[in-house]
Length: 490
Image (cartoon, rainbow, N blue to C red; front, side, top):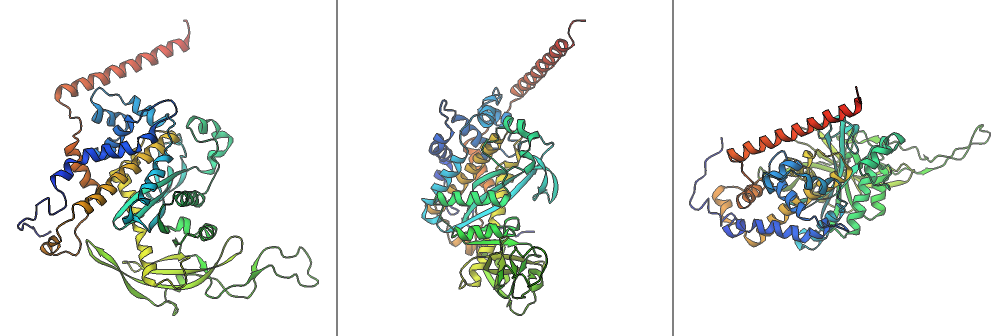
């Protein structure tokens, strides 16, 4: 049980960087970010950007059941039916990518966020059927199993306690490009120019887009879905992008540089001559998991950062190794090993320069943790996984607004930390090395106080139920009318 703390001034909002003027200004901050992004929601013929503010407010102030109807009723009023919101999200052709482009541009304008980490990861959600864009039986990492679902490939950004979502693509399995899915592709607004792309190929597109937008990242961190793809790593290297990429334990590397080429055909050998590159100097590849006890890997404790649970420290080791791309090209990389708290080891490859200190490699590897924080906030707090719409356009729009909600939280925390610094004496009084950071849930509580949601009185609740019953009766009448029409005269 935690010790109860009640010392003089401990609950003074000013000391915690939460003065009344900051909290009271949250509604204006939300209005302000909507105003900055308002042009992103306009089409050639219409300005329906007011719907974006409604949806954004719903994502940020509601905790669950953030569907079109519920958001409309809680934010706009009990008589709202959500149809305008649904049309705005599912059918209106405003470009969701414009949201991500502007978020990346705004990150680049903040000196405190330079030289951060661009994270690359994926997130899957179960579906009840295969009638959603991209839905198929596939591996869902969050569920840890193969099931019917959708998978999004996402890029995030992290720097000094600030993290947010900066890019996304919906993964479309190869089956979605066969003739049987042609009508569904058109019906669910899947762009005609989309062709099948693997997850690493989609990830590379996101990284190239971030480079084009001048997002100020210093390194890319990704999990083994991407790291195990040798061509993906080689492509990043060709783009002069530094990476720290996780790899599976059965990945093969060389401790001695292999010489690769096409063997000469021995005199008198029958059959076709050799045509595929092979290792010519008889060096053997080894699985990385066999190197945990190898004498060339010297384990050292590396202190990463202070956390709310104390100093984060890992035992780490690294060595230069060689790998082969699918095209037979030889590449020199760092093999980085980290011993996890349960005694197991994780493995990563990096193209960082040969003189990179072990502490820097360890820091990059640990920063990839914030890819999980981005997904945690997007889903648990932002409602990314609550979308029930089927269309590709709705998925992109919903994810873009979820990203904007995360950026609102990130820049609020960043601005408040600069404008209203916390009292450093709090650390001494509480006997901690690091004061806990504001969470998305914390900011939501404050936002709900200054922008309260529509509350139901008994009378309005009764009216809502009656309206629901009338609508159901109308639907029943329409079905009966259609059945009579189909049966014809008797």
